[in-house]
Image 1 (cartoon, one colour):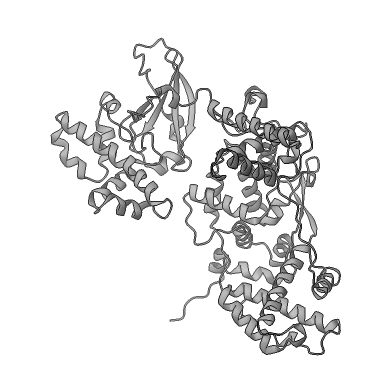
Image 2 (tube, rainbow, N blue to C red):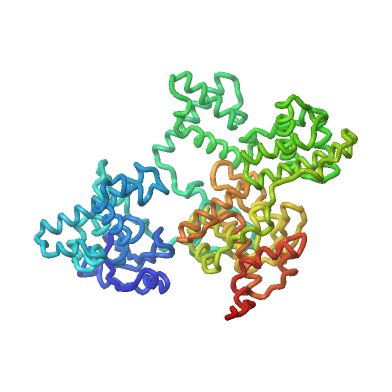
Length: 611
């Protein structure tokens, strides 16, 4: 249950001063005379605003928790009463609920979802006002149109009245259609949760113990391998899908483990849909259930086929393209990803020539110019420049292999890209700290994200360096970290700072699943728990926590923390050559891009404006 905590402090001061730790409750609201054994029960985290915690107590006799909610917080809704009030005023002044919902939330939600979001706030507030007016509080009608009226009502009304008013103003719960018991929505009981997570994925004795032994989480057998145990309904549905798969395999003489792949599950769902005359897309949670079965086999050490099919891309059929691919790999030292990209670019060029009735033997400069002009209409400037670079490489290959006598490479013109047309994006260091503080470290996913973002902001790592980090790269005894540059494939060693080591050890012990098919440090938190495969995963993680922390920035890419670290290093006096070596640049001139965002240093060297 919830009780109002009357405070005239602002939200920022409440969070900064951690005033929930100084909140007090004189007596139990269920047993005012005492004797129930009411005890302080720590606090719990609210999703918004960032860093907000609510003090709570526990009544052993009533088996209930009691929370002290500050006057400015909305009850049973995320956020503040002022946010609810803003939505209510907008609904009263708008022409329709749809237009107001579209204005407030359509950029984040679909229109039906935005309308439901608005109704969840407008309906209870309207019901609370009508209830107050019906109870003879007509003299307060002027309050209902004043700014901050919800917060003022929270302070003026007594506890009994608030208990009768619906949330978010009062404490009364929403009446659910299934008449579920109130205890189902009660806050979890027990002390404040420490970062005890899904698995104890790291059992090396050298790692520091976290949390202390007296507060160790229960063993994995008592917890679900996902966040929150599945309900009986979901478990029964999953078991039914597993039984159906086994019947399907038995009827066709198939090995169950070989069918636990993406293509195998699709074949099974197609058969099941045809046999039951349903749409194959209506398979419910079949895929999740069968991936869970696959996970069981992996944990038990029984081999299963890879979920995704192996890359079946073969060498190009054309002898010319095969020779060009060999040239790129052996003479230019390009990795396979780059070779495949350049072959795709050359394939586009050959298709353009074929459209004009020509082959590579009739390739001339006007043909290249026409091809690049077509690319400029379809792709961004940077992509067109990349294609032009491939065309130059292909022209040099034709000349070097004596397939042509024309040197066309130097005549290929690509879009001009100013080297530093725009300053690199970086966050102020205060925003970086807000970003790290916004990560919820009470979940396994939060422990992973916090360790990843802390390493990127501390060392200036890029996304490729973080997702490529493996367990063998961590030397706990020497307190060092070996990192490999994804572009140059060169390795370097950095000191493992104590703060980073503590966060990393906590993630490895309580956040990382123990039976993963990879030795990478940072893994996915769903499915087969494989390694993160691209920088886009890091970008999505960063954007999610930036929004949670209320960080507004025009650009949030996977390298924004690398740029922020570089700017801070320059502001603190690090020499450009040293910073270039730390960031892995091939030349010290690359640091000049970060000088444009080192605003503090630029202020110190600025000249007075002449009069």
